[in-house]
Length: 377
Image (cartoon, rainbow, N blue to C red; front, side, top):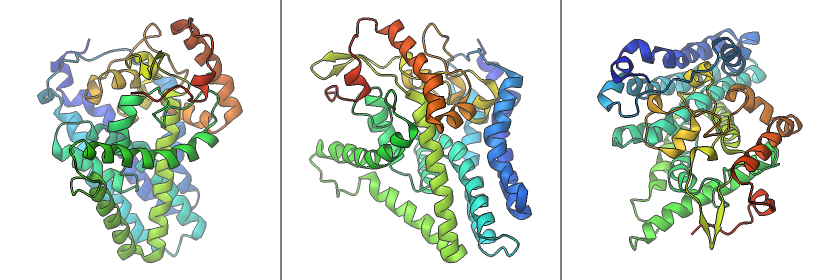
């Protein structure tokens, strides 16, 4: 076990800061144009897949009782990313909109690369920030989500996903044999409505209408409008289009990760709309070292759902005895998810083994496959 004193050293946190190298890479690619525009997605997806093969697995766990005071370098990482991403995003909107050395396709490619970074890193950091008790950190998370026009993710994730994961009420629990091409449009449609309804129901319990000023959707809309207006001011209509390209790419990055995290894993229905508690076995775990550096331990997702308020350096790794394991890290698995026949060949046998291991008493999986079990109470 990694002791608190070891975690408190800046050297321990340093590998997680590698993600900051993506910011100058994106800027350099836009300045150079041409083949250099391939670098941001290639480095984010493929280089870290190679590094996973080189560095292997990290099976060490930190002391989960480590106090926040020993995690200052990890907290500084997620906080520092927010202003730097803001400067990178809007600086490039200003620059690329008027860049004469870039043709239309190159401008699109540049902001596809920006979206890979604002999605794979930015949304991931917002996820860490939204779980924290600090109001400042939650605001920083909101700012990151507004930069990709996906602010409702906070409400959906905290009020719906964590409570109802593995049940028909959770849109982002990918169903067994549901290809990403079907999953993606479904979650885009369902998650916004699910998030809005969750906030509306929360206000109704206080006898307040959804129009009450405390509804966070008003904050979401205001922040998103401010981001679009800034893009318009800096780059005109071209700036808005480039902003939308990166936002769409980032949202796709988020949802393909959501697809991987819980594919085919469902909680047992106990009858009368009751479901078993969430356990580590209801999320896929991946211990690949380099991609966990990039994604600040997001792949230790089994523990995140078991203990949602744990900061990322304290998330625990689980072995096959307690949680299902992905064969590769997210960089490889998200690419596989885009090829449904390959995904099914790799993952469906693993889901079937998981079912046999944990739920041999369930003989009819059809209601689980089609999300036809009763809605949780």
